[in-house]
Image (cartoon, rainbow, N blue to C red; front, side, top):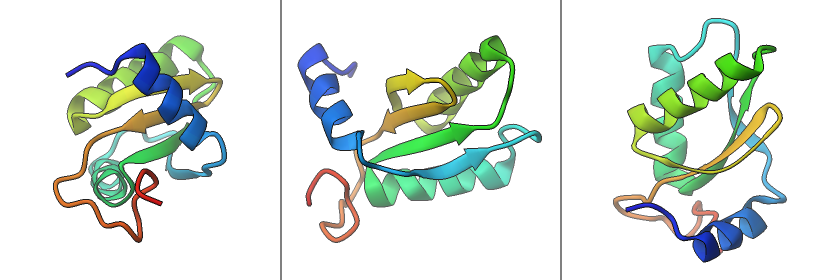
Length: 100
């Protein structure tokens, strides 16, 4: 289900002070990156991903592919940072960025 504008605004507010927990570098979306991304989304629900790719179009494609493979929704993309969201199966209040 796509995020509404109001929900995206609320998630952007929560994500403002977050630090990137996953970094995608020159090798792209490897299996290890995807595993770490899925673990982080399951733990935190709302995360920032840093893409160390210089080409803007390639970076935008990678974000789309990353969201598609992980089942996450893109909340915001600014420069080399993407804020993404996916509902956790069993949210942990100690780790979730939404339940704190």
